[in-house]
Amino acid sequence: MIACLAFRLLQSAMGERNFLIEGISGSGKTSVATMLENRGFDVIHGDRLLAYQGDPQTGVPVMPRPQDPAFVNAHHIWDVDQLKRLIDDQTHPRTFFCGASRNRHHFAQWFDAIFLLETDWATISRRLDGRPGEWGDDPRERSLIQQLHISRIDLPIGAIAIDATRPLHEVVDAILARC
Image (cartoon, rainbow, N blue to C red; front, side):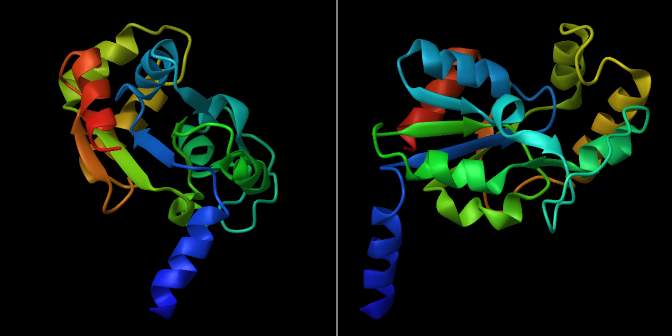
């Protein structure tokens, strides 16, 4: 009974419903976010709005090393305080946060659900080819993304898997059906 009451108090301190959509580079996070926006949902592009290079444990900013993709990936974190303010905003019935961060362990519990966009390497590679000049265009970045895809390091454990090889509208429908 006490645990149930504590959970309800925690829920009432957050926005009405908050969802995190994660996945490896090229899995479709930005495309899903854009379609959700086009359907009228509140969407936060975490990798654009919240991300910076910092220590995943302390949040202390670090000097970027753009020539070192492994360092960039390992230190790609979100501003936890800013995220908390956005989650506390109760003006929207549902808010979708799209992106990935290495400090997710500091805030994963604030989400009603975490979705993981799953896809095969051929699809990821094709998508990365279609966005020249962005992360994954450099051969070192591409190699790292492939290693991360194979190892599944950095992916949220226990997330709701969504088949992101399907047409975009079906991917978004699958997420919404679970919200």
